[in-house]
Length: 90
Image (tube, rainbow, N blue to C red; front, side, top):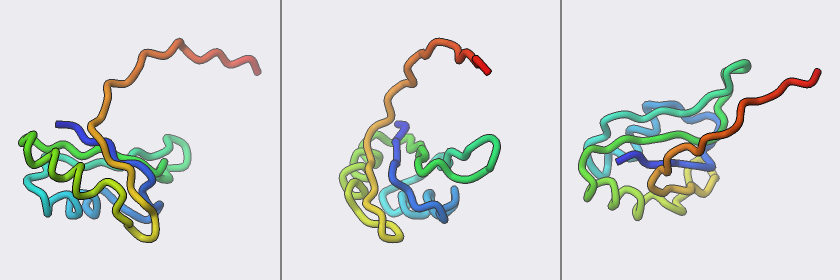
């Protein structure tokens, strides 16, 4: 199951995220989404857990908890919606 994690502190890295969710079960992958140009965190990421029961426990346990003073928003990731191509009118 893919889990969305929002409102992450800017200082967190992939390993910190994996460690936090590891308390609930086996984390297959954890990744923080970064801005392409600056490389700075966008404040959200995704965690992949193969066991749905562990993933649901992680969502329940982590949603609303604080990490470095920020209240996390955790839920099951939804598929990305198709968006029309961007048009640069510069």
